[in-house]
Amino acid sequence: MVTARKSALFAALGALAASAVVAVMATSMGQAWAGNEILGELALKPATSVERDAGVWIDGQYLGYLKELKGKRKVLLLPGEHRIAFRLSGYKDVESTISMEPGEKKTYRVTMLEDPSVVYPDLSDSGQVQIDVEPQRAAVFVDGNYAGHVDEFNGRKGLWVSAGKHEFEIRLPGYQPFITEIVVNKGQRYRLETELTRGAEEVEEAE
Image (cartoon, rainbow, N blue to C red; front, top):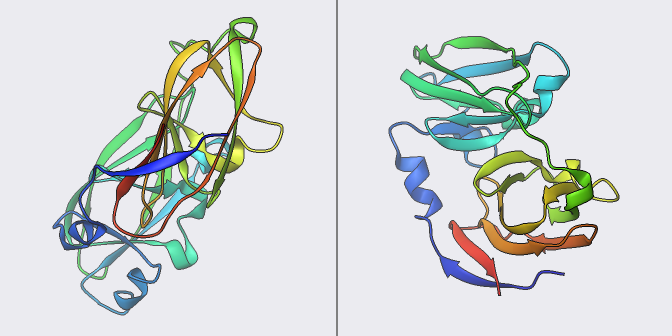
């Protein structure tokens, strides 16, 4: 099990809300904006079931994975141009620029292609990391690369990574990120367990 201690690393969440390029989800903060005719609404539609698990970034800010960004978590954007990116392990990144008008409702269809250059870990020289983190919709990054979201890697499923030292980062908007390093030995199983804390974006780092 991974134990943790807090250390400041990122600016307060309030800086995100004040940014001119912020993407606002209709959670407790976004609901206050929902009736504002200035904001546009961006609906994300996956081309297949594959894209549903893709991570979504707008203006460099991770928002969540595609299939959850609807309803109470719909994406509301300030008028103007926004950079949008989709990432999914084993697939080529999709990046684009969209323009939103005040009060506009726009649908963006997401199509991702497999990346033939991806090298998957050799299971005979890898270990498995089970990730048990709340909330389970949080994003998982390994060595800075998006791997998926927590509920893909909990229980017996786990995440296979090559033997050696790896940095794991768990991130979700509105919560303090969690960062730790795990030295993985081949054939071994590991368990990363924690609960993200709401509030300013600080980092919990394992000792």
